[in-house]
Length: 172
Image 1 (cartoon, helix red, strand yellow):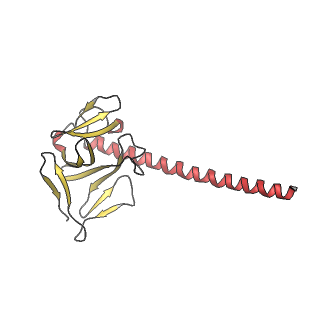
Image 2 (cartoon, rainbow, N blue to C red):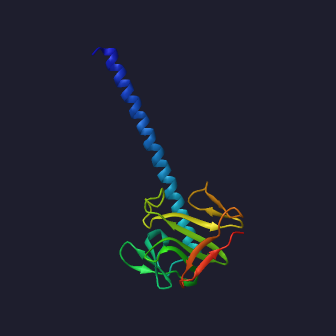
Image 3 (tube, rainbow, N blue to C red):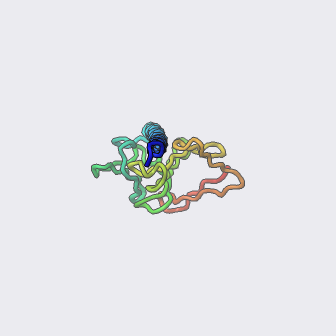
């Protein structure tokens, strides 16, 4: 192999290393921004839906036991909401809900869970998104580009109320 071929191979390798480093940097920035968004969203939960003890930041899972929302921490301890009436409904199974619906002063907030999701895979409690009910749409606290319009073209949302009955969120 001559020197020019060796230099060409080395240059190509350096270029590939540079590209790989930039891809890693982009992923780190994306992960960092996601972590900041999750932290801010959980601070919102702490202020609007405070726990009887502890913080949403430290939660490892949310489950429904009878008609109560139980919140577990990584050390195995658990708590509930300071105001248990704020928990109104869920989707999925009580032991592993795909979503829980909270309500404060007439406004609904939906926490969705996905252990394989883009955000949920990195969150201790697998929270994929936290959305606040707007007038005719839902505002995502974790994905600023996401806005779920609620109008005549979309279906009403069905949940299971904590007492087991249907809980319907009507499209505006």
